[in-house]
Image (tube, rainbow, N blue to C red; front, side, top):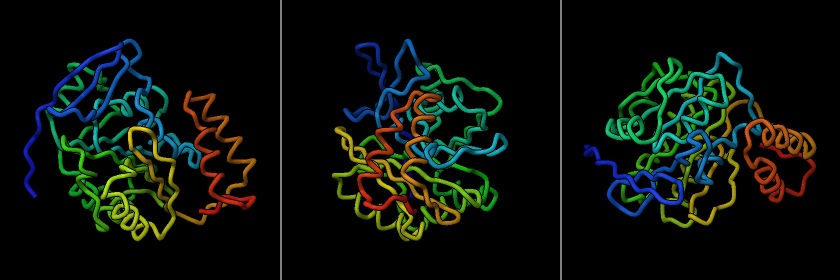
Length: 251
Protein backbone atom coordinates (compact mmCIF):
# COMPACT_ATOMS: atom_id res chain seq x y z
CA UNK A 1 0.00 0.00 0.00
CA UNK A 2 1.43 3.35 -1.03
CA UNK A 3 1.56 6.03 1.65
CA UNK A 4 2.58 9.66 1.32
CA UNK A 5 5.07 11.13 3.73
CA UNK A 6 3.15 13.42 6.07
CA UNK A 7 4.72 16.77 6.94
CA UNK A 8 5.49 17.11 10.66
CA UNK A 9 4.22 20.17 12.52
CA UNK A 10 5.44 21.47 15.88
CA UNK A 11 3.65 23.03 18.84
CA UNK A 12 4.92 24.03 22.27
CA UNK A 13 3.49 24.92 25.65
CA UNK A 14 4.42 24.80 29.36
CA UNK A 15 7.95 23.71 28.57
CA UNK A 16 6.87 20.78 26.38
CA UNK A 17 7.39 20.56 22.61
CA UNK A 18 4.97 18.38 20.62
CA UNK A 19 5.10 16.66 17.25
CA UNK A 20 1.95 16.46 15.08
CA UNK A 21 1.06 15.65 11.49
CA UNK A 22 -1.16 18.68 10.90
CA UNK A 23 -3.88 17.43 13.27
CA UNK A 24 -4.60 17.72 16.98
CA UNK A 25 -3.25 14.22 17.55
CA UNK A 26 0.07 14.25 19.39
CA UNK A 27 2.68 11.98 17.83
CA UNK A 28 5.31 12.63 20.49
CA UNK A 29 6.55 15.10 23.06
CA UNK A 30 9.70 16.33 24.77
CA UNK A 31 10.49 18.36 27.84
CA UNK A 32 12.60 21.10 26.27
CA UNK A 33 14.81 21.43 29.36
CA UNK A 34 15.01 17.65 30.01
CA UNK A 35 14.95 15.94 26.61
CA UNK A 36 15.90 12.45 27.85
CA UNK A 37 12.89 12.25 30.21
CA UNK A 38 9.63 10.72 29.01
CA UNK A 39 6.66 13.12 28.92
CA UNK A 40 3.79 10.91 27.75
CA UNK A 41 2.75 8.07 30.04
CA UNK A 42 2.43 5.51 27.26
CA UNK A 43 6.04 6.05 26.17
CA UNK A 44 7.25 5.07 29.61
CA UNK A 45 4.97 2.02 29.50
CA UNK A 46 6.63 0.91 26.27
CA UNK A 47 9.63 0.26 28.53
CA UNK A 48 7.66 -2.20 30.71
CA UNK A 49 9.68 -5.06 29.21
CA UNK A 50 12.30 -4.09 31.81
CA UNK A 51 10.19 -5.92 34.39
CA UNK A 52 10.86 -9.24 32.68
CA UNK A 53 14.03 -8.96 30.65
CA UNK A 54 17.54 -7.64 31.26
CA UNK A 55 19.22 -7.96 27.84
CA UNK A 56 22.92 -8.68 27.68
CA UNK A 57 25.08 -5.76 26.60
CA UNK A 58 25.60 -7.24 23.13
CA UNK A 59 21.89 -7.64 22.40
CA UNK A 60 19.95 -5.06 20.39
CA UNK A 61 16.76 -3.12 21.12
CA UNK A 62 14.31 -2.44 18.29
CA UNK A 63 11.80 0.38 17.89
CA UNK A 64 9.20 0.71 15.14
CA UNK A 65 8.14 4.35 14.89
CA UNK A 66 10.42 7.23 15.88
CA UNK A 67 7.76 9.78 16.86
CA UNK A 68 9.40 12.73 18.61
CA UNK A 69 12.35 10.54 19.55
CA UNK A 70 11.30 10.18 23.19
CA UNK A 71 11.93 6.45 23.59
CA UNK A 72 15.07 6.72 21.47
CA UNK A 73 16.59 9.44 23.67
CA UNK A 74 15.60 7.56 26.82
CA UNK A 75 17.14 4.27 25.67
CA UNK A 76 20.34 5.95 24.53
CA UNK A 77 20.74 7.64 27.91
CA UNK A 78 19.75 4.75 30.16
CA UNK A 79 20.86 1.58 28.35
CA UNK A 80 24.15 0.49 26.74
CA UNK A 81 22.48 -1.34 23.87
CA UNK A 82 22.48 -0.69 20.17
CA UNK A 83 19.10 0.76 19.22
CA UNK A 84 17.64 -0.07 15.82
CA UNK A 85 14.83 2.29 14.83
CA UNK A 86 12.52 1.92 11.84
CA UNK A 87 10.79 5.10 10.69
CA UNK A 88 8.72 5.27 7.53
CA UNK A 89 8.92 9.05 7.14
CA UNK A 90 12.39 10.64 6.76
CA UNK A 91 10.79 14.03 7.46
CA UNK A 92 10.11 12.82 11.01
CA UNK A 93 13.78 12.02 11.50
CA UNK A 94 14.74 15.46 10.20
CA UNK A 95 12.23 17.11 12.56
CA UNK A 96 13.67 15.12 15.48
CA UNK A 97 17.17 16.29 14.64
CA UNK A 98 16.11 19.93 14.21
CA UNK A 99 13.55 20.36 17.00
CA UNK A 100 13.76 17.36 19.36
CA UNK A 101 17.47 17.11 20.16
CA UNK A 102 17.87 13.66 18.62
CA UNK A 103 21.47 12.48 19.12
CA UNK A 104 23.12 10.31 16.48
CA UNK A 105 25.70 8.11 18.23
CA UNK A 106 27.18 5.13 16.43
CA UNK A 107 24.94 2.72 18.32
CA UNK A 108 21.77 4.33 16.93
CA UNK A 109 20.68 2.90 13.58
CA UNK A 110 17.68 4.44 11.78
CA UNK A 111 16.16 2.72 8.75
CA UNK A 112 13.65 4.64 6.62
CA UNK A 113 11.25 2.00 5.35
CA UNK A 114 7.88 0.36 5.94
CA UNK A 115 7.90 -1.42 9.31
CA UNK A 116 6.05 -4.40 7.81
CA UNK A 117 8.73 -4.83 5.15
CA UNK A 118 11.53 -4.46 7.71
CA UNK A 119 10.22 -7.12 10.09
CA UNK A 120 9.55 -9.47 7.14
CA UNK A 121 13.14 -9.16 5.90
CA UNK A 122 14.98 -12.43 6.67
CA UNK A 123 18.06 -10.37 7.62
CA UNK A 124 16.16 -8.99 10.63
CA UNK A 125 15.15 -12.35 12.07
CA UNK A 126 16.45 -13.15 15.56
CA UNK A 127 18.18 -9.77 15.89
CA UNK A 128 16.49 -7.99 18.83
CA UNK A 129 15.91 -8.86 22.47
CA UNK A 130 13.12 -6.29 22.59
CA UNK A 131 10.86 -4.75 19.97
CA UNK A 132 8.79 -1.67 20.82
CA UNK A 133 6.01 -0.83 18.35
CA UNK A 134 4.39 2.60 18.05
CA UNK A 135 3.29 3.16 14.45
CA UNK A 136 0.48 5.65 13.82
CA UNK A 137 -0.29 8.14 11.08
CA UNK A 138 -1.71 11.63 11.44
CA UNK A 139 -5.30 10.41 11.70
CA UNK A 140 -4.47 8.04 14.60
CA UNK A 141 -7.06 5.49 13.50
CA UNK A 142 -5.08 2.66 15.06
CA UNK A 143 -1.69 1.19 14.19
CA UNK A 144 -0.93 1.37 10.47
CA UNK A 145 0.38 -2.20 10.58
CA UNK A 146 -1.53 -4.74 12.66
CA UNK A 147 -2.12 -8.00 10.76
CA UNK A 148 -1.42 -11.47 12.11
CA UNK A 149 1.41 -11.72 9.58
CA UNK A 150 2.92 -8.46 10.79
CA UNK A 151 2.91 -9.59 14.42
CA UNK A 152 4.27 -13.00 13.44
CA UNK A 153 7.14 -11.24 11.69
CA UNK A 154 7.67 -9.09 14.80
CA UNK A 155 7.97 -12.30 16.78
CA UNK A 156 10.53 -13.53 14.28
CA UNK A 157 12.66 -10.41 14.82
CA UNK A 158 12.92 -11.25 18.52
CA UNK A 159 15.71 -13.40 19.86
CA UNK A 160 14.94 -16.86 21.24
CA UNK A 161 13.82 -15.11 24.43
CA UNK A 162 12.31 -11.71 23.79
CA UNK A 163 9.52 -9.24 24.59
CA UNK A 164 7.40 -7.07 22.32
CA UNK A 165 5.58 -3.99 23.57
CA UNK A 166 2.98 -2.32 21.38
CA UNK A 167 0.98 0.89 21.74
CA UNK A 168 -2.75 0.40 21.06
CA UNK A 169 -5.88 2.50 21.59
CA UNK A 170 -7.96 0.68 24.19
CA UNK A 171 -11.32 2.26 23.33
CA UNK A 172 -10.78 2.18 19.56
CA UNK A 173 -12.40 -0.21 17.09
CA UNK A 174 -8.93 -1.50 16.19
CA UNK A 175 -8.18 -2.74 19.71
CA UNK A 176 -9.94 -6.11 19.67
CA UNK A 177 -8.52 -6.91 16.23
CA UNK A 178 -5.01 -6.16 17.43
CA UNK A 179 -5.43 -8.25 20.58
CA UNK A 180 -6.77 -11.14 18.50
CA UNK A 181 -3.91 -10.93 16.02
CA UNK A 182 -1.26 -10.52 18.71
CA UNK A 183 -2.67 -13.47 20.62
CA UNK A 184 -2.52 -15.66 17.53
CA UNK A 185 1.04 -14.59 16.71
CA UNK A 186 2.31 -15.04 20.29
CA UNK A 187 0.28 -18.11 21.33
CA UNK A 188 -1.84 -16.08 23.74
CA UNK A 189 1.15 -14.97 25.83
CA UNK A 190 0.04 -11.38 26.41
CA UNK A 191 -0.07 -8.98 29.33
CA UNK A 192 -2.08 -5.75 29.19
CA UNK A 193 -1.36 -2.61 31.14
CA UNK A 194 -4.43 -0.51 32.07
CA UNK A 195 -5.67 2.00 29.54
CA UNK A 196 -4.46 5.50 30.39
CA UNK A 197 -6.53 8.70 30.26
CA UNK A 198 -5.35 9.56 26.75
CA UNK A 199 -6.74 6.24 25.49
CA UNK A 200 -3.43 4.47 24.90
CA UNK A 201 -3.03 0.91 26.15
CA UNK A 202 0.27 -0.95 26.11
CA UNK A 203 0.35 -4.68 25.48
CA UNK A 204 3.34 -6.95 26.18
CA UNK A 205 3.84 -10.16 24.18
CA UNK A 206 6.38 -12.83 25.10
CA UNK A 207 8.59 -15.24 23.15
CA UNK A 208 10.57 -18.09 24.71
CA UNK A 209 10.01 -20.64 27.49
CA UNK A 210 7.00 -20.24 29.77
CA UNK A 211 7.67 -17.52 32.30
CA UNK A 212 6.75 -18.00 35.96
CA UNK A 213 7.38 -14.98 38.19
CA UNK A 214 6.52 -14.89 41.89
CA UNK A 215 4.80 -11.84 43.34
CA UNK A 216 7.84 -11.12 45.49
CA UNK A 217 10.24 -11.38 42.58
CA UNK A 218 8.13 -9.15 40.32
CA UNK A 219 7.76 -6.46 42.98
CA UNK A 220 11.49 -6.59 43.77
CA UNK A 221 12.33 -6.20 40.08
CA UNK A 222 9.85 -3.33 39.81
CA UNK A 223 11.57 -1.54 42.68
CA UNK A 224 14.95 -1.98 40.99
CA UNK A 225 13.60 -0.65 37.68
CA UNK A 226 12.04 2.32 39.42
CA UNK A 227 15.29 3.20 41.17
CA UNK A 228 17.52 2.72 38.12
CA UNK A 229 15.35 4.21 35.38
CA UNK A 230 12.95 6.54 37.21
CA UNK A 231 9.96 4.74 35.71
CA UNK A 232 6.72 3.92 37.61
CA UNK A 233 7.43 0.19 37.48
CA UNK A 234 5.78 -0.65 40.81
CA UNK A 235 2.50 0.73 39.45
CA UNK A 236 2.87 -1.52 36.39
CA UNK A 237 3.61 -4.57 38.52
CA UNK A 238 0.63 -3.97 40.80
CA UNK A 239 -1.70 -3.65 37.80
CA UNK A 240 -0.43 -6.98 36.42
CA UNK A 241 -0.80 -8.72 39.76
CA UNK A 242 -4.33 -7.38 40.22
CA UNK A 243 -5.40 -9.57 37.30
CA UNK A 244 -4.31 -12.83 38.93
CA UNK A 245 -5.27 -14.57 42.17
CA UNK A 246 -2.24 -16.90 42.04
CA UNK A 247 1.05 -16.56 43.89
CA UNK A 248 2.83 -16.72 40.53
CA UNK A 249 2.41 -14.66 37.37
CA UNK A 250 2.50 -17.25 34.58
CA UNK A 251 2.99 -16.08 31.00
